[in-house]
Amino acid sequence: MLLKDKLLQCSLKGEALLATNFYNFETLSGVLMAARQKSQPLILQLSESSIDYMGLKVAAGLGKCAMEQYGVRAWLHLDHGGSVDMVRRCLDAGFDSVMIDASEKPFAENVRITSEVVKIAARYNVNVEAELGYVAKLGQAQVTGIYTQPDEARRFVEATGINALAVAIGSAHGFYTEPPNLQLELLFEIHRATPCALVLHGSSGIPDEQIRRAIKNGIAKINLATEIKNVFMKSLKKVLVESPEIDLRKVFPRGTASVTELITGKLEVIAG
Image (cartoon, rainbow, N blue to C red; front, top):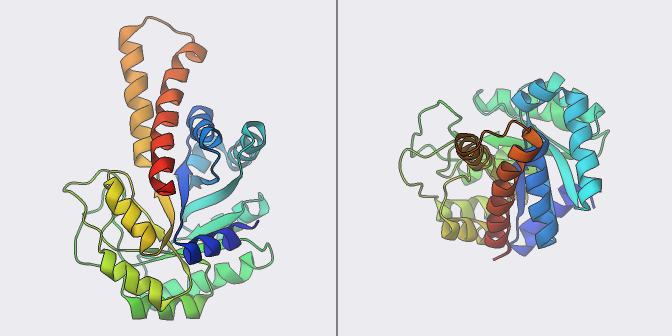
């Protein structure tokens, strides 16, 4: 099943897919082991910085080969694509889904850039995600009260033809400076205003109950990144302090196991 069809199905059923970023083989392996154990599909995401780090061909190949090796139903997605050129490169590399993020541009410019990507992606028959509103990125101020509005979301989706929309409802990328409080009633109104699959960015640190309620109110895709990096590095730092071992093949599995434990818990929350 195409990802755009799966997300639409989730949206109609009040379900969601977990979308996890990966940064190397170890984090990818940890994610896929959890998905295999829980027999659940998920989305594997690559940010531009991860693509720059591994190289596009290696990163995409790693994700696709690992899906097959672990026997997990998964889709490969470009997270926060910053340019049409990057989107084109990922489409040519066989990605199942791409995100163009022009959310910091004026509304009309966001529509223009996103519409261009939708037109290009149509030739590949893949899912296209965009963002509308202010979802603080790493290093940006976590300002409350700047939310996506239902009518604006409807106009944006109608004007662009996107399949999925990341909405600003009180979440932020990275660690939270204060406890998050998702605007769930607003989310429900956005969900009513558009048939587009809705996406929650910045789920790291959001309480499980808010995640469950967000799914019931229309979220079909839940992005997770920061917590994956955090548990992997914390576990790795601990074992490096405790042991003189220099064989990375013996050290890294501890970090991988911590990712598996994290993702297993997240999949349980999403499954309800």
